[in-house]
Image (cartoon, rainbow, N blue to C red; front, side, top):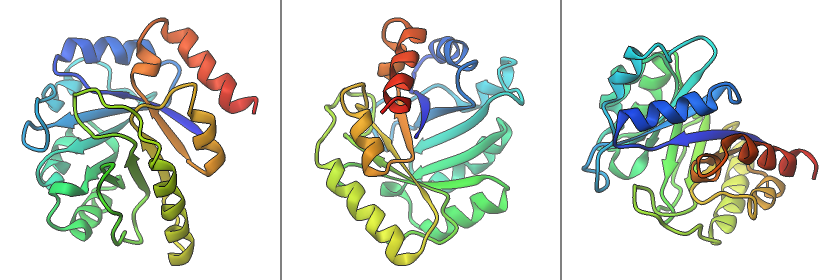
Length: 214
């Protein structure tokens, strides 16, 4: 299992601090984008990432778009040299178009499904399916146990359709549930507060010990 830190911030300065704290320990960093339409609140302007010197060959940016019509954000993601884009499907009018245009831009393409969003058809070119384990957005929500059944169904769907996408889980992942997620077949665990609340180095060590020694 791979762990990717996820950063959701209204203030760019707060995002920069989290990037600095995590960039040496992780190849990938996920930046969450909320436009104030998909959900209450709005994150910092994505283009600012290109003005800090943080965009280097050592870090791969994954952009999680919780926005209306994610396809309209592809150029912005290209501007900050993103390597993968995940678009939430809830305000996406054409899933096929989003995947194809993201792939045409030379980027990996993913689809995100909120905790209560049923999983529909997934284009064969999709690289990653991200399941939210709680309601997406700024407001704190508990990890919902029903995500385990959703993961099982997604794995069955992947096998039945002979698809190759990886499965990622985001929302409320911590030391108490990450091992169970690994055992059920999750490929990527996205962690925010579990990494950044408290001592970041100790938090990273603890998570890695759990998934690597069991």
